[in-house]
Length: 271
Image 1 (tube, rainbow, N blue to C red):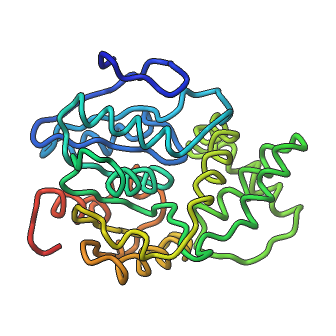
Image 2 (cartoon, rainbow, N blue to C red):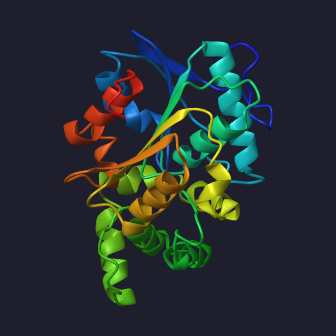
């Protein structure tokens, strides 16, 4: 635990640090920081990686506010001295908002992968709403299936409820399903809170640090749509597609996903 670093509710934050090199704070997405161990090991060859859980597991997203996550990231950057940030999913939105809004300007470079980046309605809400209804009516497997369609499936084909339930049952037995099921209420609450930041891309035009907006070729299309729109409006941002990669490729530390992130964060002028 880092002295003086606490969440908005007062709970302490466990920070796992590994590797050697420039300090890098890893901001997780739908799955907890423990699921990013393989990525941290890969990045640890070049960076000192700090990872943490944005919200204590089991809180079900009560009173969640993105601003609290941004403030927590700021505290971690101050205490660790790290000046690089990598965000995934909603963690990508938190990372970009922190880069844009922290008065200390203590982020040199920020990379995001498949960031939940609501720009002019770019993030579809239908699957999220269906997942929330399924969870509220006691169907967590069905909720998993809808969340999978929102986060991981590049196909937006409409499936029958029967097929969705069967798929949800299969997903519940996978590593992704087991990990995500434990955080389902939090994931939905956090993502819906993030969508409140929907607006034009040019609100990020003054981003004071270089940003890499990476998205998976096999990820749902809304990730790429938002990244490209932001890169067009923000002089310091570059959008790049990770060929053959899906939303979970970052957790698996897939080479085609991680390599451009390492290159960018190390300051290569290519980006």
